[in-house]
Image (cartoon, helix red, strand yellow):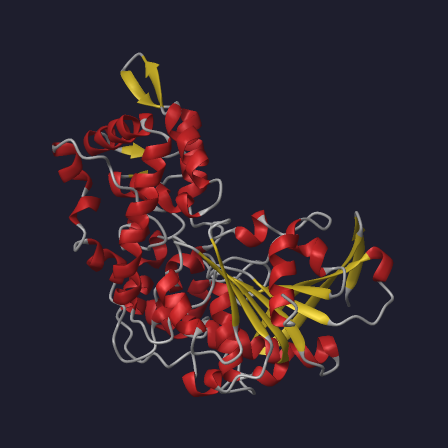
Length: 433
């Protein structure tokens, strides 16, 4: 039974669906999906077209909005919106250290997790769409990894879509994970250089913290072991519009004087653990590289291997000389499964997933070349998370896709730019821009 309730300016309804775990075996095991329907209060009884929102990640549930902020307010002017918790996230049969042991050991957990990529998410959408729209196509808005899912949707089931909108999420159609990270590390380096140019005092602050971590065993209040590499990974925030400022404020008062000397303050540790922990989104760590698997080559901890090709990210070498410490970001490493208590029980599962060699293609270039769905994509210039070159190369292969390339926003532009970003994409898709 669906439950409806109100927030300022919006009526919300909880929706739950049952879908096959493996869409190739529709009569087999099932899992539950959760989604929140949103409609403007003054349009609650109108027959409106639908828009389904696919969140970034992988591994994050849909936004828990209060009212109608950001892009949602603009969408509610003409759509009913379905905020979908993609399988394994949020309230959709979550996959984490607590639930995965129900599957059995690491090998069984890996077999289960192979069903949590973009192709399965698209099949989920197609399974529930008739129950939501009565069979009519719906629009899709895909942010980041949600954009990857949208390109998979255009490849696998374009008949289900009336419009496809993508923000910061055009994937390479054929790049191996190694190609993705070889493109990523130079972008991250540019973001770090821009941060230090904005906040030059942070060069010494970051070096001091990293040096402290090389000589001290620091365990955060939640049990996370803060190593130098873990500290470097805080650079993931640099991909957001306010990320550089957030990192600066984190670094500025990192130490406090104690009877035993200077130590990392409780306040710093509390903030650091909230940024580093994967307790709320473990699938991000588990399947992050698997979303690039499309052939018989294993991902094999790609980000860790490729990092060795970029010696400037070696903290020990930087601290031994006078180089600034390089932060990292948008990469998953095996040591994270040792440091993070939310991931430790899943280390063997992660190793087996990284060794997997039977990945299947996620995208259909021929079908994309014949696309007839109105489509538009926001491509953020020098996006830290998704390579602009890869994105534009893919854009050229999708028939009719119109792009808006902008340096006005970072990767989180759909949040920061909200109505303006959605307005622009709708106009492009409708050929009104």
